Length: 360
Image (cartoon, rainbow, N blue to C red):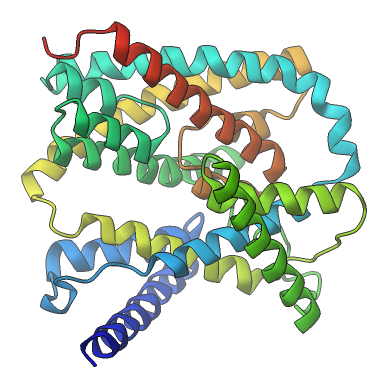
């Protein structure tokens, strides 16, 4: 009885939050904000929990299966964009992936200096807050190493939020027009392909199967990468041909935006201000370094600068993949780099945590 009431309460609160987030996304779309449905819902939810602080959110947590389901759906949509021609790029990817390892090392070292010198963090907190990826792994390892968990959590989530805010905003200024509002489609010129019941069934089946495989073999960011890789395999083989409707991408962005905005619930305003300032400096440093790497690789490989820059922007796998999908920037290419960035970061953490004295 109590369990049923709790589930009903969670469901009602979730529906209200999603509607509220969608309103924020709609307002952002009217204002021509880049990635409006994600950023608008994120900002609206963050302001709600920081300023209004509704008591109804006490003890509430966003339903993980809902977020996981939409992330799996995004994975299928991204994998479905992969074409057989992508295989011809593998030789060019070798250099880009090699440079990615250097990028991970340089960003981690630079961020640690920022958090130690500017933030005054202890070594353990600075070390794990400085990672350019592996959010959950950094938090879990940092907690066991004695890092300040509140600071560590705030810095890691703010890294992702600043990246997914600054990247599309910066690209809008650079290109001279808003980007990311139509998932790479010009909705005013072409009719949107309808999503049939069969299409939805195929997406659901691939998503669930991909999730199962990812959990079985413990893929990093498996809720995204499992469905993505399975859909990509079918797409490259010519078996899968799905058209992504705009409303489905927008809905997924609202779900992710609301779930990210809720991360600010219960955070201290002073702590948040300090962490936000440091995170902004850190993210500007990483994006500048990423732009430098992208420029060099663009000259060496002739791969599009935009694809490379988004691939090196250190946001979350899911969030950066959504940005790539929205900008029509070869989301499979981008997702591959971000999955590898997380793998490299976790490997580096595992090795360095045994070699570096974090207690000084």
